[in-house]
Length: 355
Length: 76
Image: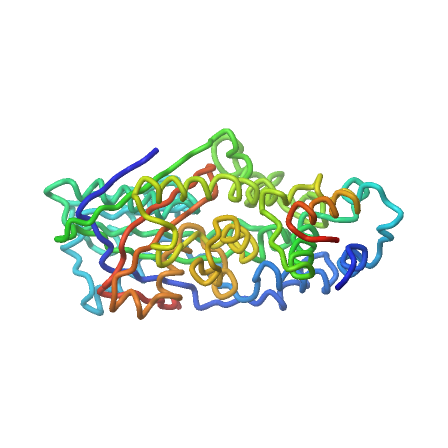
């Protein structure tokens, strides 16, 4: 499905990462694999450092911390926020919406919209689309898009398929109208028939958590995982990305009348280095124009990875100049999304630590 | 330049790859081994095996791996 937006822009990006840093080399002893094989995997996938929350830290804690930082620095005023969108797969509670909890903890005005969006790695583009749609309303002048996840709390430390890549974090993206007549193109696709490729089987109403669902099971390849933990069919996800994402982006660029070489950067979701290198090769994009280093510094934090690429790799450039970028997210749902837009000159674009 | 057998043996030295007709069915290569193997084949032959070709059937035995290498522009 295609979307076109006019006169909207991103005006600032803040990423919040937990101060708690883990090292793959230290953690690989948890996995039931020879060290040599794990080290080869580290080299190919780019696993190294990652940031995860301490026990008990929730999505709303990261979001409130980041927003308080913006208030304290004078980069955002409470009363300016007309809508607070939260994209997460790891809400504080079933009920109420975590965006409402954030609103309450920060003492934001009542005359606003709070909305949780349950999306995974495609969720940055989907959140931006929702923000742009809200800005069509006269009453909405500024939207705060929060992407946040603490998926490490739902990952088995004994599951080498997923644990070494998981990172936690939050991003706060300020979205508002643009006085220039900018045109933004976006495309989204969904395939719920493949939803089981990335799922947390237990803990909802379909299969409530119980001592049985908390029990670690041998799931093959020397991995141990419970039904309460996140499961990813790595091969299925890899093939999904390599098959579906290139045509989505190619069609988006074609529709916009923009060639691949005119795109300054392809800022993709960051599952691992290998997957992104293969994606770049397939799309004939030089690796330098499709950064892939977020997983090695921060881990894969779901829909937070695209803003993390922006803040980590393009911090200075996006403060001082405007770049044409193509965003692409892909993952749970399954869902895949892409957006072509100009980003910069941002009021802020940085990473802070949650302590 | 290394041979395919040498690369396979570096990844899983405990197995004799000349004695198997199906590395996947015999449990000699798991999905992460395939990733490590593709990275090593890419580097050895200066190619980039397409992501859509990284499926188990292309890594069942020496013949299928060599076929994949030829398809990817290498001369094994």
